[in-house]
Length: 324
Image 1 (tube, rainbow, N blue to C red):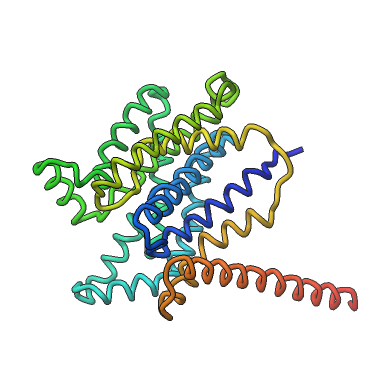
Image 2: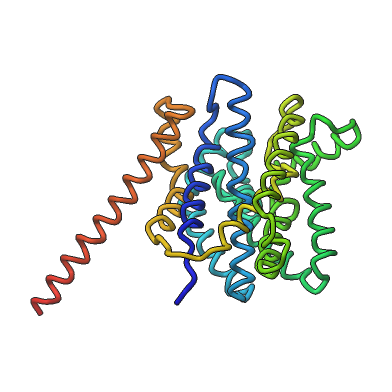
């Protein structure tokens, strides 16, 4: 019998909701409440997804080439779907029209044709790094991944950088826009997932895991305070989010139980389709929490409509088949 994770499916669905929420603009009038929601709570979602990908890649012994091609096909499909969005975005810039193909090609391998699709280049390239450095052993892998993550955190701590470092960061940002990619960001979280798969049954993940999570959460709040009083360009890189996301994943994969295919499908639909509905909401002037509710309801409506239509088609096909 296959291992199934009902709590894990619920957590994935919750994380997908947080991905929607982080894209909804201002979430509260109070600056602190807005920061806690958008810059701390919502920032847990993507590290959690990356750790799970690293965990299952290692646990199921996937072959990198086959796994990578499967991810690439999914990414290519949704990149084509959101190509009009990328085109409209470029129209708002000063870029000459003849350079649009170059810009879209560059976006495809870096940040995606829509703002949520950056995840796939980061996922694929990050997993490639984990795979290629595996022979080094976890100690050296974590040393390298941790150093790269620390460098990438210049995005979050940009307001604390001295002038030479800040200028170096701005030069990088002018070309690549963000350090949130497979090299600086995805590598470490995917490595954490692989480490969890290999050492899940060791005392590190079996003893006092809730206490470790609790302490990590408290330290994350301290880090949040440091960032809140002097905020950088973005809040993607939170140093204490690494243990928080890792320990949450460790708790959720610890006890297998029944799986909800509906929840898993809903999570994927929320992730992939939410910009389509969200941009419609923004176009009619909805922002913040109302935009979040509008997006979730809209995506759920599309999902339920798809399920209903599939059942109607299947029933109709079955009836015609029985006539024959």
